Length: 241
Image (cartoon, rainbow, N blue to C red; front, side, top):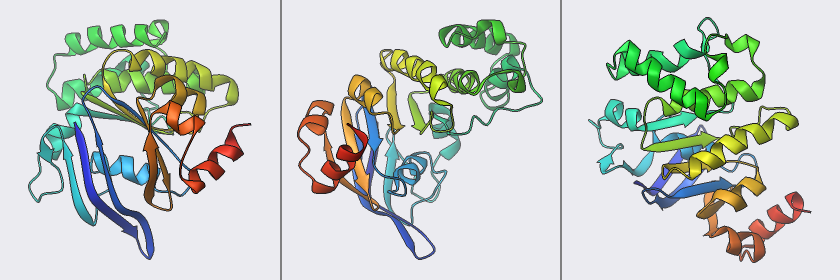
């Protein structure tokens, strides 16, 4: 479903991604972990070309996005992204936030988009908040709305870029619970996170990144029990007590 081959990206003199090569199969749950500044967010943003690689190839669902006339718009409709910040439109209700993209981008009828939106709000436990505005919701509720909004595009792939890092500790679990449930639906997921419990519970595979490179990958069992890479061992020893 996703292939990256020898992807490089620099910001000025900072070489953020160094020959990153990885693939994600259809329906796979890939969790990406590593220290801050390791290139995780840049890598996930290259999947839907929010960041354009300097070199290398990115192929999503059979379409090469790094070629000059790549069908970016079509692919972005299949690839939904949930960010650290919820990016909800503050002047719109929750329901309007969920329906605007399907109506404007996918030409879905308003009634259809609303009906589908209510189902996804139900799934994230916020059906009763359809007429509320983002400012009336907690951070955890706003992030759950952002997930429902992404789902209402009916994507094939969901990308999560540290979706709980901006939340208060007591709100993190409610968002992770929604993501765990989503993982059981068969959708392809790539998630950058610091939540190791989530990685153990959901990941088919874990990638460890540091200094712009993928240093280790494996199943959660392998990764959390017997990582081979010294940098990965150091990282895990600091965050798992």
